[in-house]
Length: 256
Image (cartoon, rainbow, N blue to C red; front, side, top):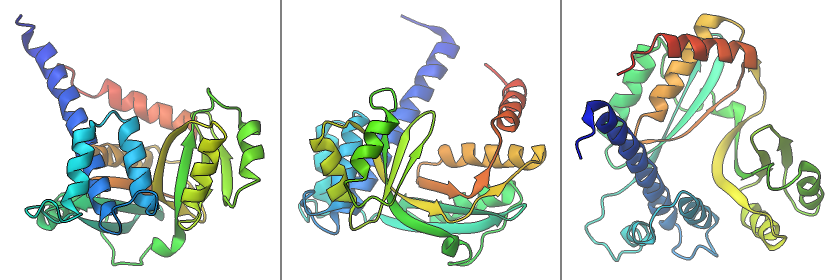
């Protein structure tokens, strides 16, 4: 049945998002498998497989991604992590982790985004000293109360627990992540997602509309880039200002 260009455009958009999700998870699994093939001995691979399954990535895709880095697939293209860092207007620190099989493409895409929004790419360690790399475990507050999770976390070596309206976030060191996550699972806690992230040491409030507008559009650009894995910043934006910016963008976006 012919459904018209609008429906087809929406279908294409959904398929594009689905492809990006599957592609990103495959990259995460492949790069994690480099260290060791056994997920029970490799926290990064364990988390990558678990998160991929939560995103409904087919088992065949997961198996193919692992084979790329266990020497079963000799034709595999190398995937590497490239980290970009810079200061945004107002002194906001930004860290972007990319996973790519084509460095030239990724560098060109990142420079395009930076230039478009008037930001300058800095050298390594320009802002990374303002962040700590740690594992973050996300739990749905609709399934478990913060108090019950907090009580369990006190029995582990987790570094921090944060209560948010959309999730409960547990921060652990790289070394302790696997032990903490498995402990929670054994206690019947359902994990939404686990990922290696950059945690800012200090946060900076942004109150100017134009800066938040540029920042929001930049985040959308990163979200649409196939190689971007993690974007971490140290900004604080009030919900009221963010809603104002989101409304402005929606009203000024062309709709088919």
